Image (cartoon, rainbow, N blue to C red; front, side, top):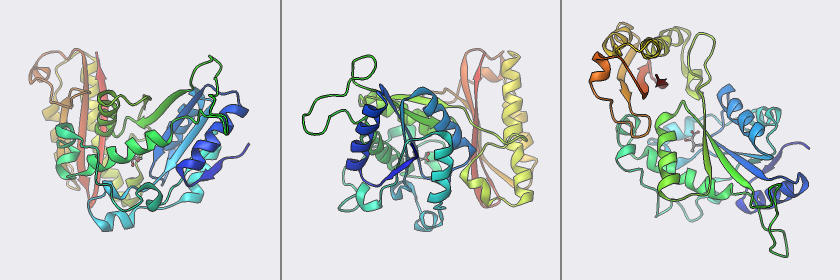
Amino acid sequence: MGIRLVTTGASLRAQSRLLLTQKHGSSQGLVPTMGALHEGHAQLARTAVEQNDVVVASIFVNPLQFGEAADLERYPRTLEADMALLEEQGVDLVLAPSVDEMYPGGRPLVRITAGPLGEKWEGASRPGHFDGALTVVAKLLHLGIPGTGLPGNGAFVTGAGGGLPGYRAYFGQKDAQQLALVRRMVADLNFPVEIVAVPTVRSEDGLALSSRNRFLSGEEREAALVLSRSLRLIEDRANANEALDVESARALIESQPLVDLDYLEVVDPGTLEPLAENCRETPFRGEGLAIVAAKVGAVRLIDNVPLSS
Ligand code: PAF
């Protein structure tokens, strides 16, 4: 069965119901994206395909999460290539709605507010970004709920286990703040979905894959490697149970003239609050997240590594 494209919530639900019935499926996975897909997205899709009977990917460039209209206009739209990549991974359905379908009547009056967790780090330089991202994620999580009602009689499809189909949604660890916020939203507002984090995919030289890498010149791409190298320094220290030498990692980035550092910090993975200063002076123990953001030329890049020891 080839991949199918739908453009409305109603047709997604009908197709999901059909596929779950045909496959005697008991689980559905959702992979929300904005398109311009790369190997990082392929990894999200593959993980979803491994773990679910039916997999839906969404492609929607969400105007609510862009600050400047020019950025929204510039965002690459590559539907045909995206569909091919998703089909290769075994995705069943693609939801690619229009802006009118997602926001009939214009921008929604009622939105999700990310709160203080959405105001720091990336939120500090992109005000309102996470409110817009969470609002569309909330809508997509609702649209992606497995289609359970059988047409006509209102009965439920029973999966292999006899209950309602399981429901999982997949987000990249690369966007650590978005992931933390989605987890909080789902927990705080009781969304009926399990959030699965998928590790960051890197190119061989360590650069985290991102749709923005295409805007880097050759020289800038080379300079950008300093971000993953600085995270590696911190990670190596954590793995060796040594004090995290964040200052040396920061100095490494600052020594690269094409890179303008915004932040490099070690934070709690759930709250994103900086970890106590003592993790810099005493051997590191526990869980942490080293996060970095910088401008390389005109391109803002983020990266992170989870720390555990
Ligand atoms: O990470 C993204 O691509 C977007 O922020 C998301 C989750 C698809 C919401 O528009």
